[in-house]
Length: 124
Image 1 (cartoon, rainbow, N blue to C red):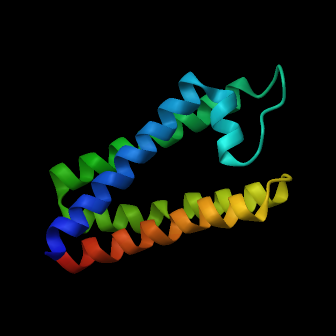
Image 2 (cartoon, rainbow, N blue to C red):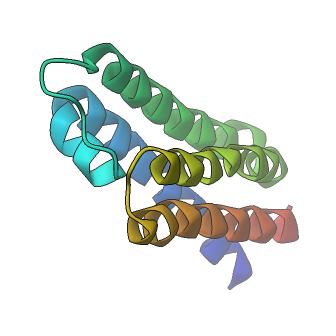
């Protein structure tokens, strides 16, 4: 029971972050608003594209590690990559975003990623 849960949560998180990356590439303004810090009209396009590329690549690396290197490598990756939503929490708070978005989306994501890492370590 633990193995399907560990793999299922890891795959779900990786696919979700690929989706978020694609959203930043194809609908950057809407994605920025959902992130918690609205994009400036007529600006920020390069930074939104960078965020999309970073997120999409992170999700694909997570999937590749899970598929080709196994749960231990994916667990270490998840442990390290949890720094991204923790950093996003601070970015939202420091740039006028709401506490609800910072903690309800980004901090909560970091917690779920850390739970995923723990589950993957448990089945490795």
